[in-house]
Length: 150
Figure (cartoon, one colour):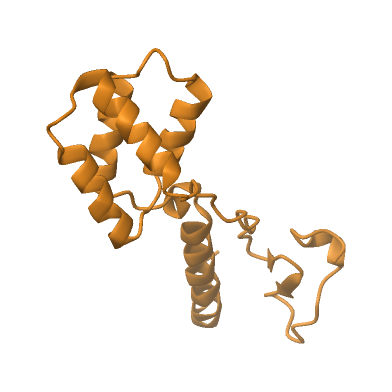
């Protein structure tokens, strides 16, 4: 059975909302944008891990450096990284100490939003549900919502 023109027009906004919601709730899209300098510092630190520094401390520094940094701190990181007075594990040790002393914290992503169901008869976002086939647009039973009984 071919859908009528009014059904196609009615379903398009739902499809657009569903696509936008799925794009904005995709964990890959919620990751921070990490600058190339931070990636180079993290790669260098991984390649030159100092044996005298605890693994938890190294991982903490890597978590911090692989987060978005303010420009002021990024300038400091560039100076530390491009300093030629140290090399290898000594430089990695210096970078780890400096990174941890900045007071910056690792990126913690927001809680992901629940996915929505895209069906012909109804669609739900949290507690806001609509029954698309219902002419009165009344709220369906709350149990059919993604958010549960809210």
